[in-house]
Amino acid sequence: MSRKNMINLNYQSSDTSLLPSDFQLEDYKKIARDSKKRFLQFCFSNAEIPDQGFKIHISATQINYQVILDEVFDLCKSNLIDFKYISNREQLLDNLAGKDDLWASGKFITIYPSSLDDFKKVIVKLYENNVLKVQDGIAIFSDRRYRDSNVIFYRYGRLKGPDKWIYNPITKLKEYRDYESMEYRLPAWVDEPFPDNSDDSKTCKYLFKKIIPTEGLNSKPSGATFLAHVAGSEEEFVLKNAHPGYMNLGVACTDSLKNEAVNIKRMMKCDFIPNYIVDFSEDEDYFLCEEKKCGLSVDDYRADSHHNFIDKKLRKKTINDYRKSITDLLKNVQILHDERIF
Image 1 (cartoon, rainbow, N blue to C red):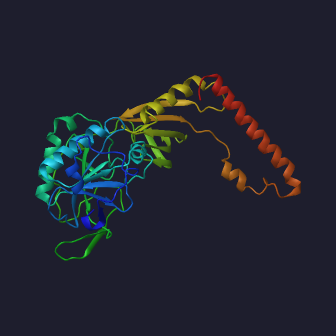
Image 2: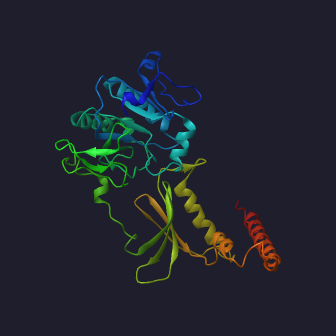
Image 3: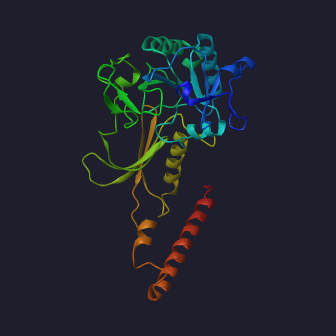
């Protein structure tokens, strides 16, 4: 984001509820804001940000975001590096809970190097910071991890808006539109600056070998749900996944899914609870396989012309069906409450 897209010294305390601990009065002179008041940017350098190039993203968790912000602020201020961050605490907590879209998820801090050489120098400084080195963070799916860091990621893309195209610097022609794919991508004229990282050597033990996902049912940054089957079998089951680092209401999303596994094991005696099949981990991601329960969805039921309140001949039956379903749901909820599941 360039200075042209920012509004200097125009922010309200209600929008900015998160500041670096060592924020000084002099730092007000370096502040800029985006028009949507989501980010606060510190413009410490006098360098012009290029239209496109490498940017660095720093992730965090709901536990350590203040520590990470303080370290990045001190490092960028002392080295005259521009950066922006999500400055509203509530918006940040939603982001770190997986409630943002996939493109934004985990991107707490964005650092704008002024050149390729600057990018390489800055990312090494960040990696060598002893505090950042031991912090946990959220994996950023659109980016590449720097070496084995849990919080430092980078990608090549647009640094200024509103144009979203990546241009060939020689021909000046459009090459591809940025933000079209979640995959990390480099233009043809750019070499990978850091060919080796810890992700390159990771291999799956179960996923796509013993457990084969076939269809996505639901997806969000903190995890996803799929239809899947065991290799060599066509019987479908539900596969749920939770990514590390995300938290909701103070509970890690991986722990929530592990708790679901515990609960369905002890509640399989109830016919409305899916059977537990297996659970496993791939690196730090956690997966739970459970029975696929058969039946009509509410949307399918409502769409069926035989279930409506308008036709006089069908109204009484439809009302009775709804009454039966609602009563059954309430009965099942009471069973869960009796088992101390809420």
